[in-house]
Amino acid sequence: MESGKSQEVTWITGGGSGIGRALAIEMAHRGQIVVVSGRRQNRLDEVVTLLKKQGYEALAIPCDVSQPEATKVAAKEIVRRFGRLDTCVANAGFSVKGAFETLSPKEWRRQMDVNLFGVIWTLQAALPYIKSTKGRLVVISSVAGKFATPKHSAYCSSKFALVGLCDTLYMELKTQGVSVSNILPGLVESEIAWVGNDGQFKPTPSKRPNYLVWPAKRAAKSIAKAIFKRKRQAIITGHGKLAVFLARYLPGLTYWLMSQNLKKLQES
Figure 1 (cartoon, rainbow, N blue to C red):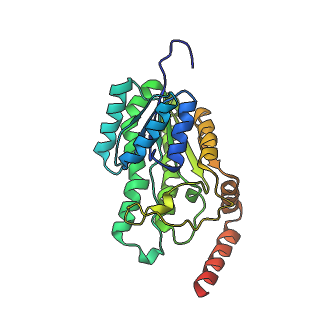
Figure 2: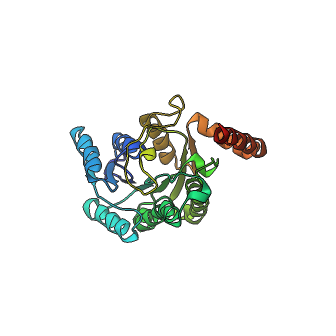
Figure 3: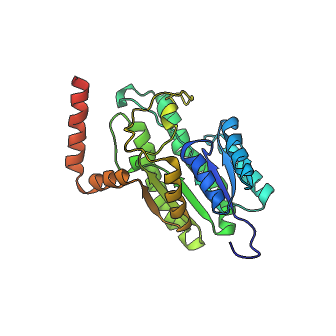
């Protein structure tokens, strides 16, 4: 960091666990003051306590990103406390699961309220302050925004929408000195599967193949590099890159094979 320059501030939503927690630690190691937000105060406090023990400055601000006013209050409090905001990471999200015809309007709205509108409200709340520092807007999306999977219609829809949102914001803000980075992780160690369709936290065994799952710490290092390089888009994990490649260049074959595999599972 340049001499005489005040320390940069990073705000991370969904910062109490998984990628958010690991990224909070990584950003602190890279010289950032870190503010973590989320709905679970105890998890946020754990992250802040850990960082302070390591000698870093950190703050927890509880925030439900589905509420626009809550994100505005959080952003204002960050600037009040530290005088600036340089990086906003919209990371909060969860996954609604189930066949399309089984999902209720309430489940669809809850998915979009958090994964899509929660990102929009977070970025809108942060943007006035990010403009003044010519900082960075970051969206932690998913390869599910490029590669659809069965029984995740709501989740994939929310992530595909984020790709369009980020591409648009990148063009709108480029000339104003604000970078917009869309981060698309593949399978990364997290508690996303522990949140039910009702939005409640329910620890359950993961059905994801362990050999493909990246440790959150490893993913956080790759994400931080992309943030500081101000990359427009970054796919995290090797299997994530492969999935996106197949969906782009061999979509017919890829989705046919997936549909056949799902059919076999349903018949077995």
